[in-house]
Each structure stands twice: as C-alpha cells, then as structure tokens.
Length: 493
Ligand code: UD1
Ligand code: CA
Image (cartoon, rainbow, N blue to C red):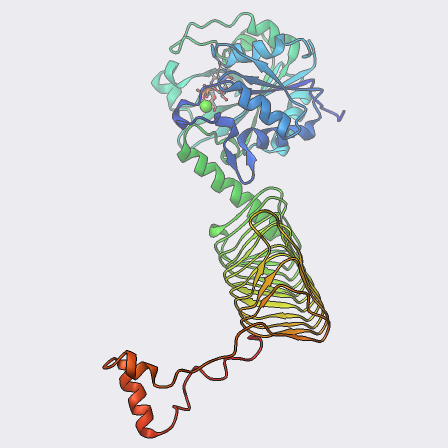
C-alpha cells in the first residue's frame, strides 16, 4: 500500500449509453488499443486500492467477460436498475467485499483520459485537508450539461447543482464536477442513506452527497484537473474526440522520448506500442498492439503495423505488417503484406506486391517483386525472382519449403511444397519445382520453345500485328529493340 492508497475504487459503468446506439456496452468501445473502461482501470491501478469495483447494469455480461479478458482484478457489482449515480455507489458499497472505512475513490467508466497523476493529486489533497469528500473539478469553456460547483463567499465548495436543477446564475458557473471524487468511506455511506430522488430527473444523485456533507459541517475540498482529462464519452462524436486526445497524448509522449514523428495529426498508435529514440515515423502510419520500433528505423508513410518488431535502421514504406519481425537494416515495401510468422534477417528485402506468411527470410536475402512466400525458410544472400510462388497448400494441408544460402530462384518459379532447394542452386525462370534441387544444380522444368513461322500473317491477316510482321519481313530482319528477347535468364534481381 502506498501513502494514500484508497480502500476502494468504484467505477461507474451501469448506464445505458443510449446515444452510442450500439450493441456493445459503451465503456467497451476502444480507443488507442484499449477499451474506455480499460483506460480508466489503467489510471486507477497504480493507486493500489484494496478493492476495485465496477458497477454494471446494461450489457453487464459483456463487461464482466471483458474484465476477465484483460486480466483485471476489478470485480463487477450489479446495479439492477439505474436509479442514479448515488444509487450506483450505494450498491457498490453494499457488496460484501468493500470495506466499511478508508478512502473510496469514485470514477466514471466513460472518461478514459483521467491520469494517475490527477488521481494522486486528488488523494493527496483529500488526506492533507482531512476532508470528508474531495472533488475533482474542471473549468470548462462550455459547461453545458455538467453539474456546477457552487462555492461560498469564502471560496469553499457548498454544493454541486445539476444543469437541469440549476437557476441562471448557477448555470453561468464554469467550474464543473467531473464525477471523480475521493470520499471518506464511512461518511459517504451515512450521507448516501439520506440522498433522495427529489430532483428534475427523479434520480439519486451522488452529487447531493456534497451538499449534505457541507450542511453537516464537514470539510469538502476540491482539486482542479485539465479539461481534457475530464472529457467523457456519450456518443460516437465524443468517442472520436477522446480518441484524438489520447492519440495526441501518446504521440507527444514518444516525441518527448526522442522519436521523430513527421505528421502527428495522421499518426495513430496504441498504448502498448514502444519506440526507441531516433526512430522516424512518417505520415499516415498506424502502430497497433505490442509493436516495437528500434532506434534508427524509419516507418511510413502509409503503414499499418500490428504486433510487429522493426529492427535498427530498417525501412518500412506503405506496407501492412501483422505479427512480423523485421530485422535490422532490412527493407520492406512499398506495397508489402507481411503476415504472422514472417521473420526477416539483417539486411533482407521484401518488395512490391509481395505477401509473406510464416516465412523466415535470411540475412541479405531478397524477395523484391510480386511473390507469395508461405511456410518457408530461406537462407542467406538468396534471391527470389519476380512472381515466384511458394505453393504451400495442397487443398488439405500446408507444407514447408526450404531454400538454402546463395540460391537464385528464377522468375515465375512455382515451388511446390514440400520441397528443398540446396545451397548455391539455381532454378530456371518459369519452372514448376516439385522435386528437391541438390546444392549447386540448375533445376529447369519447361518445354522446348517452338516458333510457328508466319502464323500471324496467315491467321490474323490485316491485323496491326500482321502488318508489323510484314514490315519486319520486308526489312528482312527482326527488330533489334523487340522486348521479347533476353527474357529467359534466371530471376530478376
Ligand atoms: C454526472 C454528474 C455531473 C457531472 C458529470 C460529469 C451526477 C448526478 N451528475 O452527470 O455532476 O458533471 O457526471 O461527467 O452524478 N451510472 C451508473 N448508474 C446509474 C447512473 C449512472 O452506473 O444509475 C454511471 C453511468 O454509466 C456513467 C456515470 O455513472 O458512467 C455518470 O452517469 P451519467 O448519467 O452520465 O451522469 P451525468 O448526467 O453525465
Ligand atoms: Ca455522462
């Protein structure tokens, strides 16, 4: 337990979230790789409360399952009917495992930008002022819809008045309650027992506890937090707003850690991403999951990486990478699709329109163009010619292809797995390789070319091709710039 460790944290998440118009519980909508509720729990977790309770009602099973899924220690307490925030907290405190005394922190489940730092400031003020309750408040330029914090002539908090119950003078107040509080547990229980639903919404307001405590002569303190931390989500427009704010926070953090981010406004990353100093992230890039970028690597523009590791000095451009490991100094893209199990050695290259899956590509080996590499192990300094396909699937099972070091796979080779190509071997362009190739051999699998002389003029008379053929015949020679010659060599480089 730390200094001001609370006895309990109560997270309010039973509301319907009507304006989301969603089959998914509001607090389970995700921003930057975590649910709204997950962000709130991540902020409260370092407080080391003895108990964390999530009040659930609407779509409660989804929330309970989610808590298990994210491995949270928080327990769900069911509020059968949503009779108001005061009723929600009363229900939470009734749950057998919540202790009778100590500090109780209340936070809404739909305000994901609250920070541990602000919660610590709240707890410190609460302890230092020996208050019965301490509010987290915020000055809003537009306080519409929020409960206003009413202070007396001495500047002390007197009450919170909900918008709907407020007169014009009260509505003019810009300091609002954020639904985040620290309470003395015993006095909170006693006050909650006296809260009524005699108000515009017919609900038991948690905010009424403040007025009751003040009239009992108890100390009520307040701490102010930046507006952005108190932003809540009621609809999908606000969901996008908090997502942008969270993105700004994450991206700013990494810039301060020494990462160059050329266009923060179009760079999105999740909370679990890690980046070393002197990495560069270019515009329109999304980094998800546990993606890790090492120093000197350059990612983007136009990349989506999930759970992918990018080694020192590697470059990834306009590519989509899932659970891949990109080695140091290697080169990916543009237009590459790296699927799970892809592992590139140092200095390897995967180029345009190449898809890889479960593929190990050794140091300095290259798959530069138009290929599919699935279930493969490729050695070092090997070149895979354009349009090579690792034919890994026979319709029933997947099979492995093993290619050695210093191999040259000719363009348009079909490697029918399971098959092995030994060190230093070549395959001829256009070959279907279904048998192992020994080290140093050239494997060639294709028919002898046959030219049917004069076929075009005979079978396509009058066509542009026939005319061209005739002209060429008139000159008595083949056009030396014809693109069809010299196209036979083993693989493109
Ligand atoms: C509440 C505060 C208001 C404050 C605002 C900050 C009250 C009466 N008002 O208003 O002073 O400015 O938050 O955002 O507290 N919930 C339950 N069970 C219920 C009712 C609500 O769990 O029976 C949960 C909701 O799911 C939500 C949170 O409590 O997460 C807040 O409830 P909401 O109805 O959104 O309160 P506001 O009107 O926003
Ligand atoms: Ca709300």
